[in-house]
Amino acid sequence: MFTSFTKEEKAIHYPADRRTFIAVKPYMLVIFAIVILLPVVAAWLQYLIAGLPADPGLIFTSITPAEPNGFPIWVNLSHWVNFFFLVLIIRSGLSILVDHPRLYWNNGCKPGTDWIRFTPLKKPKDKSWTAKEDARYISPVLGLPGYRHTIGIARVWHFITVPFFILNGVVFIILLFTTNQWLRLIPTSWKIIPDSWNVFVHYATFNLPVEPNGYYHFNALQQLSYFAVVFILAPLAMFTGMAMSPAIENRFHWYPKLFGNRQSARSIHFLIMIAYVIFIMIHVSMIAATGLVRNMNHIIWGTDDTGNLSGLYIGIAIIFITVGFGFIAHWFSWRKPRLLQQLNAVINENLWRVTLNRFKPKAYYHKNDISPYFWANGKMPTSETWRKLAENNFKDYKLKIGGLVGNPVELSLQELKNLGMKQTITMHHCIQGWSGIAEWGGLPISKIIELVKPHATVTTVAFYSFGEGLYGGYYYDTNTFDNCLKPQSILAWEMNYETLPLEHGAPLRLRVENQLGYKMVKWISSIEFLETHKIIGKGFGGKNEDDEYFDLLANT
Ligand SMILES: Nc1nc2c(c(=O)[nH]1)N[C@H]1C(S)=C(S)[C@@H](COP(=O)(O)O)O[C@H]1N2
Ligand SMILES: [Mo]
Image 1 (cartoon, rainbow, N blue to C red):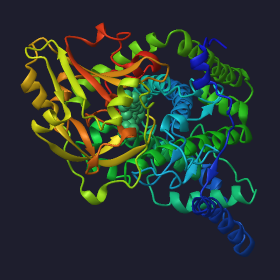
Image 2: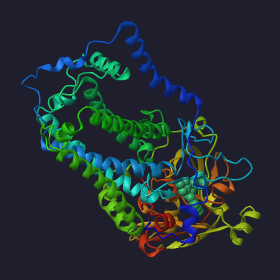
Image 3: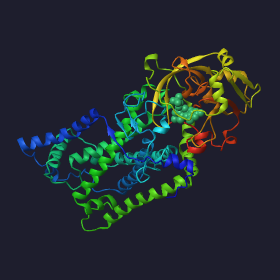
Image 4: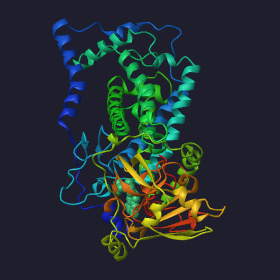
């Protein structure tokens, strides 16, 4: 619906193999089973041996005057705004997830070391297998925008909704603490722990406890879970999200380590999503089980009314609106993707340009950090020119450097090597989600800039490839002039102390470490200095930017 894929796009977005598949490594299944089953077993043991604990609901028979009386309108508004954005964030997150349908606890992302995979395919041993080929399909009913390899638009949705989600959360928390509503959520005594346990024993053994009237007070377990959702899950989602940014990782190397490493941050980000989904399911069931009409009046009207059905109806209407917006979002994704991108640029790109993009990459890694495996991406060049050059070990290769420069040059590999060499060990971040640490050796771009003397008006450097893009046409990308000047920005002919392998971009590939992988053109044929990226390709700054709606700046 609403889509108008060309034949080439259809082959990518709507492939023949659309199987849904989930496989979790046994050790993780054991951990999940323990985390989930252990409390239930303990609750049953307590119930069968010591009997049911005192009903915790009875604590709340009297209401102290300091306690919040009812729900002010801002609580109800922010609750539903939060719901609306959370749905968009989860759905776009799923689309992002399946573009690299594996989660790991290690930075190198070797296939097979994933603890969960959403693809039935193992990496074939006998042929090359790129990360792009590994991407999976997800139904547009679940994912936003769904289909396969739609990460460009999925990220636009993720990143334009996150600021609203955070803003709503911040406003909520400020109001929470400037009123007495905080008493609902913040435990004021450690007694909340045993009380919550008692409530849990009741639920787990199907002895539903007396529920306090939520208008004044939540039960202990309910309070603790709401507290956790607001003050643990939401911030952790934000912080693990930030840990995936290449600009942050290579400047504040310690940061992803707070979560183990870059890939465990991605795994935790995913598990938080699962926690949210489980929370929503239990939350909605409990709302229904403990007085649906009354609860809905609480959260819609802020009244403690048991007879008026309008709260329930409006609540259902809001859920329908949220679902209905899914159709609008789908329409926008396929009919007005550029408009979405522009919105994203207004909200995020400007912000990133003056924040994340200013960070200077630092070299942190050592030889023993180098990943044993490094995913490859992109289509190997098929052109006769490149094939002939490769056959002769690129002895006849000449890198053309021109555009708005005082001294255009053509340099052979040897001439480039004579200009100097820098070696650096860095982490590569692919937009799809995988990473890998490798050594890169080559000429700092700053040396080229010294040599060719770009005009003062130059803001952008374009790198053209011998290889093709996903939908045909030569691959290219642009980087800002200042990113090219940053430390660790090099034209590499060496990977892990060996000649750059063909599949990783021989004879030359770009490294610009504060950016995502797609900015780092492989199989470079020429370089052009420009005033603006708008005059080449379709004008969006790169092959992926033109064809796949990737961002011009790739700091996140
Ligand atoms: N010519 C060309 N360069 C390219 C690509 C491509 O498809 N074609 N893919 C990019 C992407 S998305 C990534 S993640 C990196 C992958 O580099 P690697 O294959 O060495 O891992 O190359 C980048 N450079
Ligand atoms: Mo990538």
